[in-house]
Structures are given as C-alpha cells and as structure tokens.
Image (tube, rainbow, N blue to C red; front, side, top):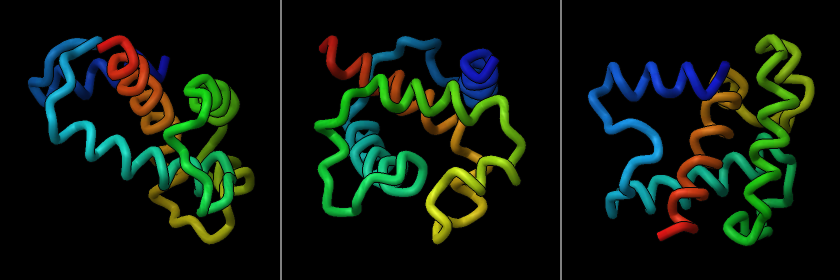
Length: 106
C-alpha cells in the first residue's frame, strides 16, 4: 500500500514513474536522508555510515512501521526525533529503499 501511495505522490508531483532515472540532486538528498532515517527510524548510532547498510533494513523497517499509527510509530523510533519523522517514516523508508535500489543498478 505504501508503494502505491508513493506512486500517487509522484504522479501528482509530475515525477517519472518508479523506477526513475536518478538526477544528480537526488543523490545528495538521498545521502542526507539515509543518515537521518538510519539514526531516527532504524535507531542506529549517529556515527555509523548509513550508506553501508543493507538496504533491505529500510524495507524491513517499513514493513514493521507502515501498519502502525503515528503514535505507535513514535514509540519505536528514537525518542528525540520529531513527530514529522514518525509521520513520514513509511513513505521515507520505502522511497529511500527505491532510490538505493535504482542507484545500485546504475
């Protein structure tokens, strides 16, 4: 369901269907968000390099959090993270997974 919601957002934003060609600015966006999602959602130490993570960790975490409510998600993410992280965790995890999968194929 989350992937379908992402495609709806991409359609609305007039962005190419998944999998889309990665543009240069997307790589930078992805690196920053891989870091924040690794720290806040995957609860990995801030000093850890999230690029070296197995991307399936993002997908596995998405399968865990997507069925949850925002309040339930806030209980499983880093306590210091803001509510926006909980609100966007399902979308973000799947989107980052998709970006990494596309990037690793290029």
